[in-house]
Each structure stands twice: as C-alpha cells, then as structure tokens.
Image 1 (cartoon, rainbow, N blue to C red):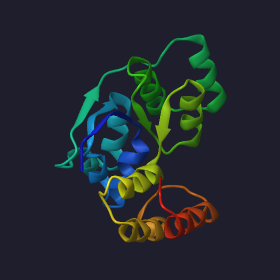
Image 2 (cartoon, one colour):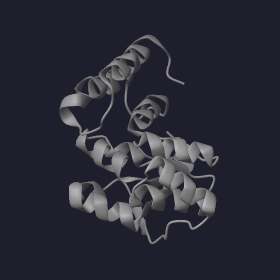
Image 3 (cartoon, helix red, strand yellow):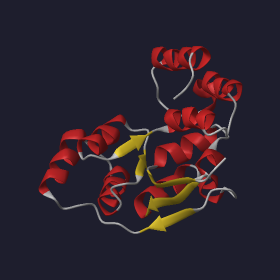
Image 4 (spheres, rainbow, N blue to C red):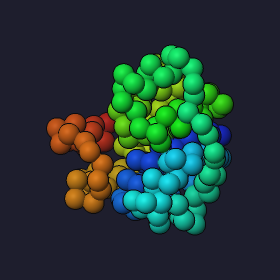
Length: 171
C-alpha cells in the first residue's frame, strides 16, 4: 500500500470517533495531518489518547479564524464552532488538502468554498480501497458503530451504507 500524497486537516470529530472505533490508524497513510490548536484542545478535553496514537503523526497548528466577510457569513449561517472555523481557515492556506470532519455543516461550508471534505465513514470506506481493512472488517466496525462511538448518524443512513458495502465494490 502506498502512502497517500494527501495532506489532511482534522476537525475533532474524526479523531475522536475513529479512536473510539479503534480505527485511528486509518489516518496513518496521510503524508501530513494538521490539527488546529482549537481542535487539539477539544480532542485533548474529550479523548486525549487520540492525540497520542503511535502510527499517526499530527502537527498542532496555531490558526486564527478567517476574517473574510464571505467566510464569516458562512460561519454565522451554519453555526460553525471554533474548531470547525479554525480547520476551514487552515484550508485557505492548504486548498488542496482534505478536510476531515464529521460535522455536516462544516462539510457543506468546505464544499461551498471549493474544498474536499470527508468524515469518519468516508475514511472507513477508503480503508477498503486502500487495503487497510477488509470489507468484512469495515462491516463489523459499521455494524458496531452505534454502540462503540459517539458519532451521530441516522440509523437508516448507516443501514444504507452497510448494505452498499455488502453489495457493491467501494469506489
């Protein structure tokens, strides 16, 4: 398996949720993982062990939320918290990076700004393509997700994802 050329910028959700699921190592193939200071503090408060995974190297980055009027309008309209604002602001510096966030409003903001964004579920599906986990292993994680993680996902959506993984080649 080759190392991903991608740079990732993390919001708190994927770090917390993937750690809860025992899958934080799935981030180990990103060349660079940048974690804004605001996000680092949030993860440190809720799940400090996620910041100490031996296979995942994270770089703590100081960043001030963007002052651009359009950005601030998005922040207000989507009620983005400080961590999400910092992660999106860091995306301005690294527009080819991938934003990792489980917050649907933050993903919507990223997409409206022209950035790629993925969540924990996307990282799990990516693990099949990158041969980090077998389809069966990912299915077990997905099936156990409601009991093992604080990730909020509608059960009908989770079931559709599970069915897709069972029946299709994940692209």
